[in-house]
View 1 (cartoon, rainbow over the protein chains, first blue to last red):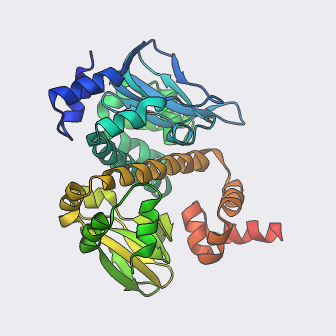
View 2 (spheres, chains in turn red, orange):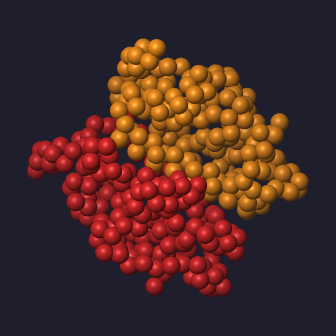
View 3 (cartoon, rainbow over the protein chains, first blue to last red):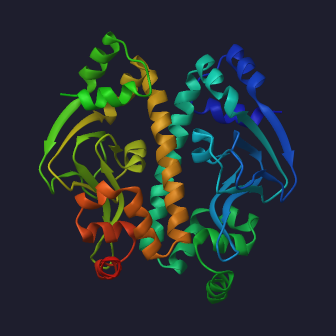
Length: 190
Length: 190
């Protein structure tokens, strides 16, 4: 059931059979339907979620009544609100399944115990967080340096499969412009 | 000489005297004058840098001939280009001292050896990267949801000391607008 997570971990760290057994005893499984939430704003985030299959978006509701997407995550990515998880304070974000999805999650209240038993996990998360942070710095750079159209073209060529999986209005929100602007760019291309 | 770094580490992990000795043997010290660079674009980033005293900015040169600041770092923060450091490919960024500064740095080519000797460092970096990543997600949220003026006011109230340390044109670049726009906002306030 947790094969995709174990495969991903093995790319970064060594886990003995005994280690895997320990890990499995701390994992939880959840199957979600499209549009199900694993976090809603105002609540405290209680777990870190690994996507074994599917797609999620993290967004906040704006003062203007729209939804601003700050993050997407697909197969083999983790998603959580680290601010809320770390400090155990209410989140300003929502995390919702964009497709029917399957996740493994580690609850906050056992995370430290698990890390103490399997310190290799510190290394695993150090490496994936390093990449996530590097990607977010690049994203900030793109937001500031590229026009909306350049951002779309770049995203399109970097993640062609991903573009097929999410509705256009979500992609527009993630890239920071209106669905109308995205339609205009796409029309120009064809 | 490395007291600020040791103090910071002790907030997150346990280090025995023997551990500290090991760590010290892997650290390098550098004193920098204002405007000195520790990374220039086109070069491969070779170290992760802990700021013991001072202030740095990470920026890229834009097609329009301006400098776009993507990150600031002050005392007790780490700064590097993780994309370049991790993949050992040329950086698109520059990292420059904004003040006379003192840093401790760990070279990429000994990092793995050091982490193998002191696995607690995996935990330390996991925790600080988690916070850095969470902060960058919040920053993206602010960029999309707040007006330039709101962003300035928020930054001003969150980091009042910091505002005093960096020139106005750098702050404007970091917040994503022109120095003229920043002057206008500040004039309104006074």
